[in-house]
Length: 486
Ligand code: GLN
Image (cartoon, rainbow, N blue to C red; front, top):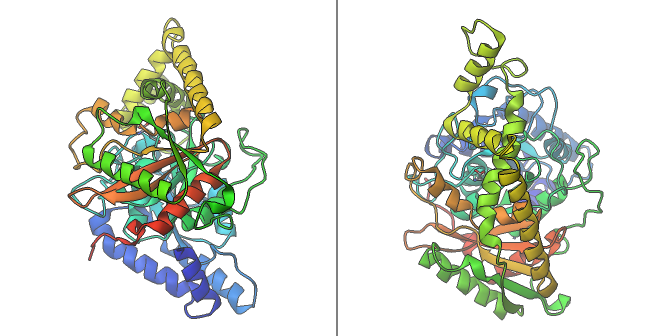
């Protein structure tokens, strides 16, 4: 099932115009905003102008691509030329990028209609979208709960049916965690598959942009549109991009016996019973579909979280040095010398979580501590990658829960950063190893909150996880459930 294809058919059959679709989407987004707060800003003029261009193409008899006229939402850490991009931070309050990020450029060229920029944790640091300097985003399934983070706005916009698909970024789980909490599909690609040009940097060796969709096919179509080599990003991979959506088959039969490994270390202490049950049941479905299931061990998996919370803040502390009150808009008033101006600007412009990360990162990179922390964490990263390599000698795809719990109540973890960090336990190892990972809906808890199944494959095997996800989706009905929002 693909909502993109459905709309595309309506457009080419001239049942609806792109402007009608855009206007309806903008209206629905606006009606739901007071409840959800998914968007930091809606961009109706931009959306309607783009929709008019698509209608003109259709009227001229030109062939349009699948994404032409499709309403999308973009996380507010991707630069959009002439449209404010705040990264959820006060320090970028007035930042209007003079250039377009590669991913948004690609989507615009494909004719996609951007409805607006979505809310996020400040500088993508967080697991609940609560560190945003601007607003709290609600989980569409229960407005008193968080949508997950840091791409919470993009996940909520898709779950709440405000946008058909959206883009998020994932440094340690920021696509997969909100996908799991909001009951949608979210995919973090292989490091280097999607250009980071124009993405506000957080942890440069970990950051990747990826899609959210209500179905696997929609995520596959969107990934195909944003992936590919970009000379503007030095870490961009020169690889051929397959037609991900075309490769999707309802069963595994054509591939021989697909081997799926269940990561042993992700079960046990700390994992909610209801999550464990749903994930175990999902693994049973994959077995029924013909996959061979094995239990595999990644003994260093549990060191992922501590290593991540040294490496990510280290990189962040370097990346965020550029916000000094000179180059980017916000500057604190009343300083009598340059040093004072820097410190006042940063003290007023950054929120608590960002300051915490800068302090940790500056410490772990400083002389005398570098070897003990940063270097050690990098060594752990290598060991972790070796665990994955050994696992992929035995199996094609790894599965585990996306998160240890379902979405929690807003405010319940904000006073305790370490508990908040635990939400990323199952997702950060994937970023440290540069692998693709995906979260798909696999059930609900007793309170009706969605549960996510994480699928991980070897580098550049997005086709495999998409295939497993697609076959699972065909065999289940989770994606048909929608939150009651009216
Ligand atoms: N929650 C993690 C963090 O705060 C991951 C965030 C992300 O992937 N951007 O760093």
